Length: 474
Image (cartoon, rainbow, N blue to C red; front, side):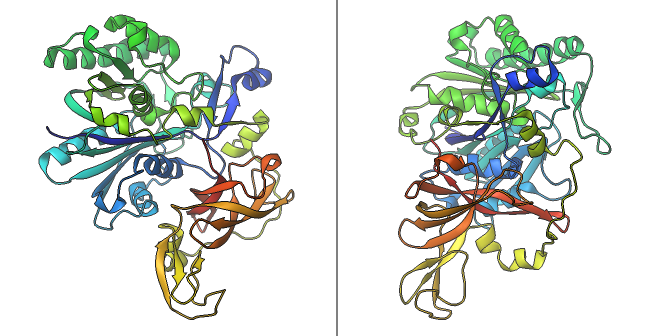
């Protein structure tokens, strides 16, 4: 049968910025709807972890022997992001990890490499995660277009929800969107009509036509087409060029999420899978430095993958940013008043020593009284037994909110108030942590909570990642 898709997952940040808010600030036509905005403690790594956890529901992480991370906005220029994602997912240390970067087509490149690895026998299951959080220039066309999000596919050779019937790849050095190594915080681009006509339309159409021809199919044989589009108009024009009927085109996410860069075509493919049935063909395609197209055939196993949050449930679960100013704070797009804050220094020695707790999310279960502690300690806080514990991963568990506090003056918090919570975990254990993605006015004792992998702060020149708590989404 060959390699195919075993499972899928996705992630959309809970916050949205209305394009009406952009119009209030800048005037002009910012468009309709809204776009997804990553929280101040989110980046491409944390979103990748969330999408991957959605994808791995019902799968033993220890059976995954590879993870490919794709993004144009990885948090580090010299450090592998995939290794951090793999640690947060508690993948085996022997799992092969790799980053695919510097192109909108990196997600497709990672997917193609995973398919080849499984078909070639060097891996049995490879997790492919694409995640992007591009910062657009204020008062630009990109500001209303760019959104944040992630998607994940588990590629394997057995128990497939979708087979891969064919693929077509075209490579090109065409220069349309870019950022230089030095000096470019925002993307650059050439004249819009030229790059759309000579880049997007030509290369993506050639890849789609080439794939259909090689498979002996026509546009009429396709159930859904889930393909990248730089904007809503170009996306619709491509459908006409391909001879696709409106019902065959997977609706893009421009009005609800935005263009999510390297993750966009995968997120659209997840959305198509959510509404597909056994036997449907999905034409999935990415653009960037050429184009990549995949032909997927849905199997009857897809019907069992109904517990994913995916795209639809994430899109429905949202909170609106109160103002454009809050968006500026989240993205750190201005010079702010310098408020005295405690020195935020970090120790690599601590991360080395506590990696199993901070990244992999393991606590301890006392061998005497059975209570669970996170983070782990040498002394049980209940019975005072010393050094008699069993390691247990706690971040897969949910819990109930026992109590919480609100701090309106926390100088280090970008999303005030700072919310600290005590949560009773299912199966035992009580933890104290910071809450994120929460509406302070809707917090209630007893509400269900879950873990989420986030940034705490930046100190000593590196990102500090670990686990926070949020109200259960969707």
